[in-house]
View: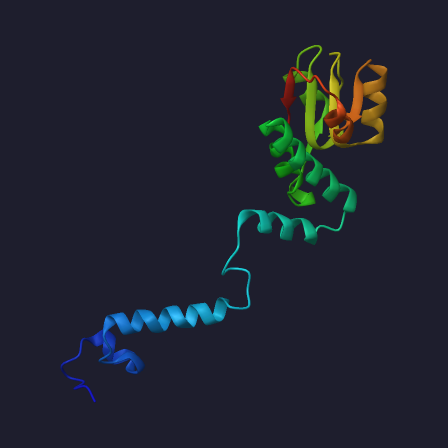
Length: 171
């Protein structure tokens, strides 16, 4: 039994570890932490399994398939664009991007491919001849794009095109 008067004040508070060497304390804490993590995913998790766990929680099967296809295309083509789009689409719905036509008109040039990893909304007018690829379009936005002579395509259709130049991500 240790003499309480000779111990520092920190050790007096925690009587379970009183008089125990520092190395033994660390070993006990590590054993406690490992036993707490034994049933969880923290122990041996790599980035790929983290992505798969995140994708399995998603309920929208079409979106999950699109994200997987974007990741495969990123690896096959060695283009960071597809990986970036997949990463943006993995966000929760409330954090996904919504872009108005006025913003597309302001930040794009003629004959450019504009990619929106979210929804295109109809606020504003568009005067440039652009190709807009997005996850979803509002009904009025699709009509305005058609009237302006622009092309509105889905991200899946954009992936199937072979030569893609002048791409701009907006959102």
